[in-house]
Length: 449
Image (cartoon, rainbow, N blue to C red; front, side):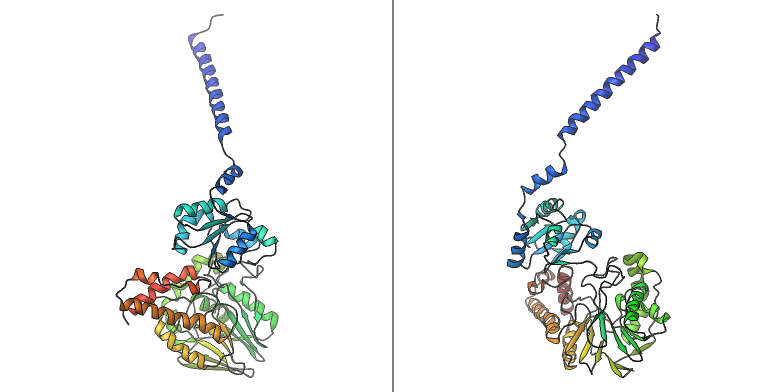
């Protein structure tokens, strides 16, 4: 049989193509045999890094409580699987962001660090990454969070009220005072912006709420809890200052018929900057910001405003400059209980920004002590006593101002201010986010005092 050249060429091409496919497939098989799987790789990494078991981590935290414990899981894992290991300094920096966020939060290369994940599969790689970044005292917790949790060792949850917008539901402080204690962390989507204390006072004629909440839906969640405790309507909502988490939920309460009260400085700030606060909140809270609108408070005052309701005397006091515009405290003289607002801190580091008057805050503190409170509900953190908030608020301000004054007298620079020893406060939540910032702002402001 005679075949044309074109048919022969076509057949040869097919044979050649088939041969090439076989060769390529064979090369992939050979390459595939050389690939390492994840388990093999992680075992190799473990040989190159320091490791701790559960007992070792317990000993580390006992002997070196300043250790920073980094959870490298994603936030949704933390909220879904029982929280994080509880320590004086626990951070969540997911593995994919370590290179970017760790230097911002931990500027000192010799800081003791322990890294963990759920089962010890990601933390070895994260530990090696931190060592490559230059951290000299990094260890990997081999067992992982689930072993720690299942042994009944201390954990902290990302949300104490998973069925509510509230971070935690109200706890009773006195016969008629409750407070929903917010997260001692920055506002996030996960905590719905509930990172401050939302308190309320129940009387025979109505309820007084202190702080409107970060958004409309959060305010509604608080109201849902109030209605489980009392049938009395909310008559007044007091804003402790002009910050978003204090005032952005006001339009919900206004819809319920409540009167909104704030210091005049706070009202001025809301009128000027409220829309910007709302936009920032929307970016962080996304769909949880639904329904939130800016409204201006109904009632303003300068020095003192008294609410008499259902036999309860409730005094709103402007004691002087402190943390931010219009900071006030709510005083219940019959109970010797003060809802202090952001004048007083103790579980998280106090926040200083360019508008904070630290010298004025120290002077204001003397008036705050003269009020005579036996129970203090601070702006952030659980109820406590005056001695405790004095230690972690006034004493911190005095210490930092004294240190900065020494630096200024010696013609030191801002870089020196950042190096001021704040280790005595390193156990406070938000220390790593705020300590360096606080030092810089205090130093720069005191240069012009």
